[in-house]
Amino acid sequence: MPEMDQPSVPAQTFVYRVIRYTPNLVRDEWVNIGVLLIDPNSGERRLRLIEGQDEYNRVRRLHPQADETLLRALQEDLESRFETNGKNGSRIHWRELLAKWDNTLSNALQLAPPKGVLAHNLDEELERLYSDHVGLQRGSARAGLPGSRASIRWYCAQVFRQARIWDRLEKSVRVAEYTFPGDPMRLDFSYRRNGTRGFVHALSATRSPGDAKVLAYTAKHIQEKARFASEFAAVTDVPLSKENERHRFVSDTLRDAGIEPIALEAFASWVPKLRALLQ
Image 1 (cartoon, rainbow, N blue to C red):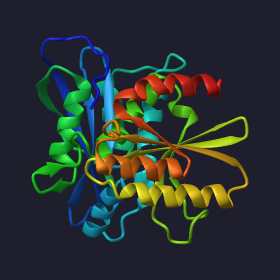
Image 2 (tube, rainbow, N blue to C red; image 1 turned 180 degrees about the vertical axis):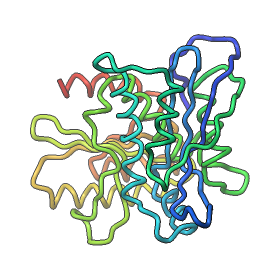
Image 3 (tube, rainbow, N blue to C red; image 1 turned 45 degrees about the vertical axis):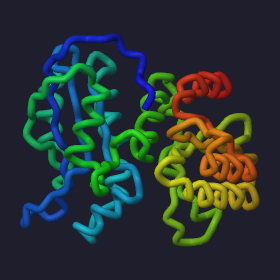
């Protein structure tokens, strides 16, 4: 994964809290769904919660009656609580804010006790904590490690936030209205500009090149059925090489469907161009 433009800093102590989903308080059975990491000196934070359908499916396997609507809205809800805390002179210390959360969050949501961790970088440490406490385990590989859709999507979210267009994006967009009822697929991000709706989706060419066919199928259905002009971009974990047969398959499949492939390492340069179009 490309490094965020961060200066080299000595290791320091951060505080993190794992976010748990506990739909049945009587049984006291929970599943970890996110991580909140804070620099106690500056109050700077990082928050990551489950986003992928496979992650929601895991929660449903453990808790069949899980409220997926609540879970999908949680990231925006918690982020807005932080933002509100910084407006109109209402800012309070992050410890007081989290104490307030402990008393006001839904009964199904809990913040695990705070723990300290020594690390050099908030972003890198959040990735590690998410992999250890929340990410899906797939043999020796983990969902939060480089190359996974989860890590690509997370990196894209950070770049969108730094570019200050996060609030102008729709997230986890259902495609069933353009394909067929019951289609579980969701596109990661969507934006609107001058009557055109754009879609940005993470794609792991290394781990799941076959996903390119699913994305191409979805894009073609949206182009055919939607009443608006559309454009698509797929953010791939690696640059697509013409010398690599699988990469050629992914590239040709995407371009045939009118989808622009963008290598993850080039995404931070692509977003400012998008931002200019959204002004």
